[in-house]
Image 1: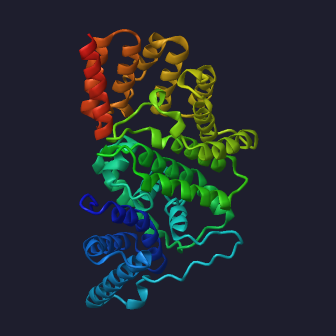
Image 2 (image 1 turned 180 degrees about the vertical axis):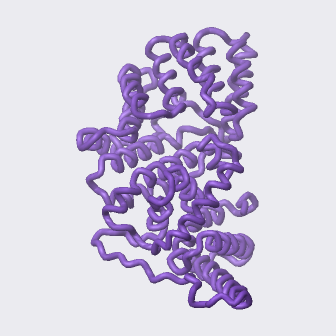
Image 3 (image 1 turned 180 degrees about the horizontal axis):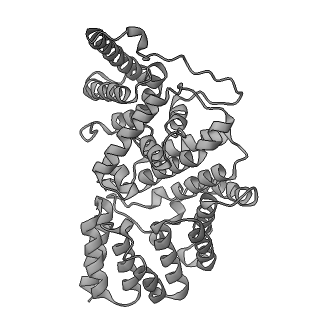
Length: 417
């Protein structure tokens, strides 16, 4: 469904509650596809009634009740159909026992349970992450496909197969034990990372941010850290989210226009979030193996601790990106490494690194490579080439704030030349 025509408060509320309602529905009925359909029907009903009648006192309970009623109707219809086909009703495994939270300290949050359930080891990492982004993150299939740099039809098939695998596994809806959580943790953290990224910089639409997604990613990461307080990767991811989200208020102007990092009013940055993130980074780097999230958090901390853009410790950032490149086959890391190289060794050095990415198929059709190239060409004193690449990037992006920003940069260079 689309929330485009809804009151913004109702829209955010429904987005926040959707994964919780799906979790509650899955707790009662083990049918992923039908559960998603039931939740969608509940959301549609709320979108129709709440703006007219007002938000109920217990909106989550209202949605769960409607979704469960739809699922009950679905079960009855299935039983009738199977009876007509002479299939024994007892063989239909619709209802599952409630989850049992036997371990102390486990937060009985259906969304968190759903998160770990979607990252079941029977699924490949890519399938688990895709399914979780759909069920927990609330991202559309198109948005997920863009995150994975694959066609939308390919992603739709992947998600469909993942749902079927979850249903076939007969896994009960409940928090997995400590060993199972450890097996699924890598996928869980990657999902939360992608949900946060989509919330912090929306891949499409009129707004740069989707705070419902970024806030939920932070909330769930905090919940995972409660389960695993000594895990350095979890602490690193939480630190990365806090240090990045701390800049959100300064990233857009009065009209929602994008403001780049070096032009932001740093007095608007959330100092409390920065202090919390910085406090997490040190121990996360010194306890246990260093992974991608700790390194990215350390880079974010260096940006946030600089009082002015010109005070940024770019040599240290470049050194961290050099380490990160060795453990990550991610073209976005390569792009950021090129930017850091340009800030230390000059734009020509950065442009030379971009040439190595021109043949990377994962960046085909993406606006990011063209945007970074335009930025470095502008710094290298080649305005005409920069204009061409800014316009190319603007045509490729589906984010309106990013498109407007890129076109504005091209227009400024045109006026100056």
